[in-house]
Amino acid sequence: MLEGFLRAIGAYALYERWLDGQVRKRVIPEHLGVILDGNRRWAIARSGTEYQGHKHGAKTTQLFLEWCLDLKIKTITLYVFSMENFKRPRREVDTILSIIEEEGRRLLKDQRLHQNQVRVKSLGRVDLLPKSLQEILREIEKATESYDKYYLNIALAYGGRTEIIDAARKIAADVGKGVVGPEDIDEQFFMKYLYTAHLPNPYPDLIIRTSGEERLSGFLLWQSAYSEFCFLDVYWPEFRRIDLLRAVRTYQMRKRRFGQ
Image (cartoon, rainbow, N blue to C red; front, side, top):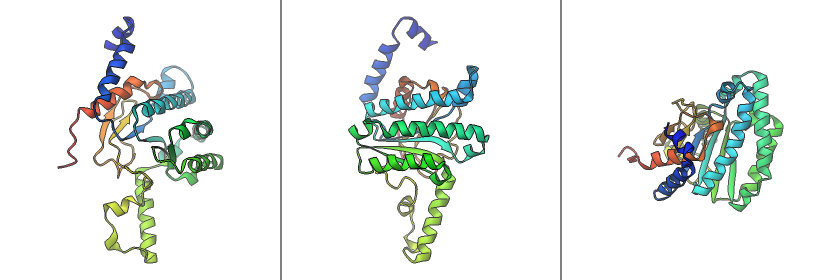
């Protein structure tokens, strides 16, 4: 009701600017994880095809990355397509992956990656994705591999349990080769075998999930042990800059103790 009133009197933009000013006075999260949820439900609620939701969600993602750059959030990790998503009908999976590939081609040509020195990396079992999408992801990673000012991680064919299993397999292989011994394995050592090993800070300060669902669905299970969570009752295609600002402000108002 408050938002409707603000729009009616033309004060919504003023409120957003005020909120922006409040957020910038406090510590901005260094690493932000986002579960992009609710694309299908957004489309169905508008009597459209479920794929329209993913297309609108892709546009929202473009805007979202701009907002994060503006706030100087160093690391963004987006949960785009999970291992479980492969269980959906084949036509739906193919359509979603084609939309992701289209966005990948657009991202490859986006000069903002180079202007802002954004390193892009895909997280997950990328070998399960279509060859054409794999190639686009490799091109983006190669074009940005030398950057270290900002990091954009795209979780595709990703699962938190899968990530831990893959890490355990790599460690077991290295132990078998005599490269390392069991006594060498601790938390810091284990982190080097996870998909996020390239990040200066692999631990999300804040994880946002849209659509009103309140669960992680396997997202960064190891890395999120001390993350703050913000579950928003808004579908991803309709996510706005003010939603990001509110989530960051919620994070800023919490006192983090990390178990101490």
